[in-house]
Length: 490
Ligand SMILES: Cc1cc2nc3c(=O)[nH]c(=O)nc-3n(C[C@H](O)[C@H](O)[C@H](O)COP(=O)(O)OP(=O)(O)OC[C@H]3O[C@@H](n4cnc5c(N)ncnc54)[C@H](O)[C@@H]3O)c2cc1C
Image (spheres, rainbow, N blue to C red):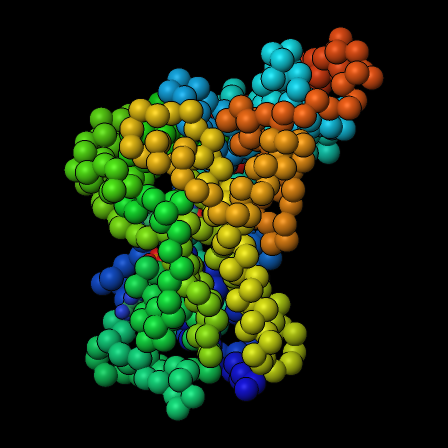
C-alpha cells in the first residue's frame, strides 16, 4: 500500500509538534498542507531545557538565526554536562562535546597511565571541558574545534517555532481532540474536536506527548518498557530566580538517593528538577530533596511529571508517525529527547522529499532505525548508572548489580578487556562520548597496551602536559559565559 501525503496533520503543539511542522513547511514548501492541532487547555510538557549539539543543525536547516533564537527562548550556551556524585559522593566529571587529542593514538595507553596514577584527568585534554570548569564560553575556532548546544525555555521555543511555521504557511487549529476517526484499512482518517469540527489528513504525525493519542491510543501500538534498566519514572520540576551574574555553561546532573537532580541556567531563571524512581524513593521525599537544593527563590510551585522509560514497538504504523514523547522517552539525563525528535523529523523528511510514493518498506526502514537509535542511547544512559561505586541506597545497589542489555554488556566487556570502544550503527553518541563516561566513572581496560613498553612514560606524559598547557592558555583568553552571551545579545 502506497501512501499519499498532500495533507499532513500534526497532532500536538509542543516542541515535537512545532519542530515537525516547521521542517515540513520549510522542506516541502508549497507542496503539502500542514495543519497543527493542539489544545491550549491541555498545554505542553515544557521542561525540555537542555539540548544536544544537533539542535544547531536543525535551527540552521530551517533557517533560524542563533541570536534571534537565544533572545526568543532566554537561551544560554551549553558545553556539556557535569556529573556530580555518580561514581562516589564528592566526585565529579564532565561529558562535553569535544575531543581529547589523539592520546598517542591509543585510548588504552592513556587509560593505563591514568590507572597507574601517572596521567591527569581526561577533561584537561579537552577544550570545552576546561572552558566549562572555568565558566567560560567562546564560539569554536579553527584551532579549538568542539560542538556546543543550548539551554532554553521549551515553552518559548515552541511559541517561537509556531510563529515562524505559521508565517511559512502552517495552519493552526486550537481544540481538544475527543475522538479519532479510522479508515477501512485501519489508518486514521480524521481527528474529531470537542466542538464537532473534524480535521482530515493523509498522514498524521502524532506529537501528542505522553498521551500518544493516535499511535498508543487509537492504534494501540504496544510499549517496549525499559524501566528495568532505567527505573526513574517521575520528576519534580521547579524553576528559580537567577542568582548572581555568572552562568554555568553546562547542565549539572547530581546523583541523589533515589534519582538525580538537574540544574539548568537560563538568562532569566534557573531550571531545577529531581528525576526519581518511585520504586526506591517516596515522591514526597523526592520533592523535599529538590526544595532543599534550590539555590534561588522558586518562581513556580514544584510540578510533578510521571512517565515510563521505553518506546512504542513501531514508530510508524499505517498513516500515523509518532515523534516526540508520543513515541517514547528515555529519561532526560543526556538531554536526548529533543535530539530524538529531530532525528525522527530528519528520517521522515528524507522519505517525504524523495519524490516517490511511500510504502511498507519505508515504514519498516523508519521503524528499524528508530528502534536502534533508542536502544543505543538507552545503553549509553545506563552506562552512567551501572558503573557506580555507590551502594548507599536501594537505587544505586539495584543499578550496580542489574543485568545489562546484551548490546551494552558486550561493549563494556570489549572496553574492559581490550580497551576497544566498539561502535554500532545508529549511534547517538560517538566513541569520544563513551570514553568520557568510562573515564569519568574510572572504568579502565585491564589489558596492558602493547605500545606501553615502546614509549618512555616521561615522553608520553610530556606530550599530555604540552597539550594541557596549550588548552589552559587558550581558554584563559576566553570571556566568561555571561560576558559572551551579553555581547551576542547586544
Ligand atoms: C522531567 C522531564 C525533563 C525533560 N528534560 C528534557 C531535556 O532537558 N532535554 C530534552 O531534550 N528533553 C527533555 N524532556 C523531554 C521534552 O520535554 C520533550 O521531548 C519535548 O518537550 C517534546 O514534548 P512533546 O512535544 O512530545 O510533548 P508535549 O510537550 O507534551 O506536547 C503535547 C501536545 O499535544 C497536545 N495534546 C495532547 N492531547 C491532546 C488532545 N486530546 N487534543 C489536542 N491536543 C492534545 C498538547 O496540547 C500539546 O500541545 C524532558 C521531559 C521530562 C518529562
